[in-house]
Image (cartoon, rainbow, N blue to C red; front, side, top):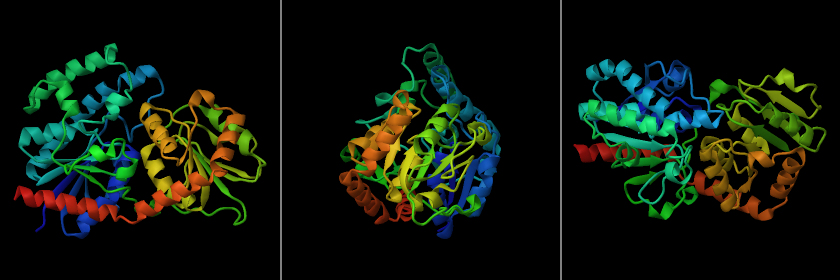
Length: 393
C-alpha cells in the first residue's frame, strides 16, 4: 500500500546525503515521499524521485559550522528559530498533504513541532552517533557549558515555544526524548555504547548512493598514492591549515588533492607544487575510491564514506561532534586523531607516516569496510519504516 512519508531534513550536506539512498528505496517501493529542504538540496531529492517542499532556512542555503565559541553557544537559539520558521512555512502544505509518518533528522526540531500539533507519528534519523539513556553526544561532548548565558536563554525560549505546539514546557525533556523508532546511519560497532541500544533503534550503516551531479575524478597517475585533504563543506576559516598541508606534502611521494570549500580562496595559497591540486570542491566518493589516506575534519559523513571505501584517516576535528568521531576512529584503530592546536607541518607528516605504516590500522579499516558493505543500508532503513507504518495500521 502506498503511504505518504515526509522527510524533514536539517539543511547540511552531512545530514541530507545519508538519507538519499533511503528516499530512493522508498520511492522505488511505490511510496509518495516528500522532503522539506532548502533550494540548495531540491535537485538532489528530485533526482531521488521525491517531491521537494521548499522553505527558507535561518542557516541560508545550507549550514556552515560555527567558527567561534560564542557562535557554538548560540547554536541552540538558531536551531529553535529554524524549527519555528520551518513550521510557519510548510504547515499549509502538510495540512493539505497529511503524511502517514514524518522521518526527521534529530536536529530538525520543526518536524517535531509540526507532528505534535497534528498528531503525526515520528521516526528519527541520526547521521551522527545515536542517543539513548546511556549515551548522548550532547551530554558527553557539549558545544558549550550549560551555565553559558546563551544556553540558558535558548532553554528559556524553548520552554516558552513548546506549549504552542502542544508539548510540555520542559526543554531538557524535549532534548532527551527518544522516539519509538530511531534509524542510525552507522554500524553498531562504531556507535559509542552500541550494545546498549535496544530494538527501538536500527543500525543501517552508511546509506551511500552515487552523486553524478558532482562530476567525476581520476588520479593524475596510477603509480602514486593519493592523499585527500578536506575540512568539509561547512568549514570556515583556518587557511593556514591548507598552507601547512601543502608544505608538508608538496614535492612528496603523494599525489595530493585538497578541497578548501567556499571560505578559502585557492589562488590565495600561492604557487603549488606539481603534485598538489587545490579545488573548492571535488566528488569525494570518486576520490576516496582511489585514496590511500584521508586527512579530514572528521564529520560523520566523511568518516563513514572513508571507512566504506577502506581508507584510514588522520582526523583534525573542528567541533565537539568531530572530536567525538575522531576519538572513536582512534579508539577502534582506524586512524589517528590530531588536535587542531597540535597541527604543524611536522605533526601532519608524522601522523600520516604512523597511520600508513601501521598494519593493524590497515586491517581494521579493511574489516570495517567489509562489515559495512555486507549490509544494504537503504533496504534495512526502508524495511524499518514500512514495519513501523504496519504497526500503526
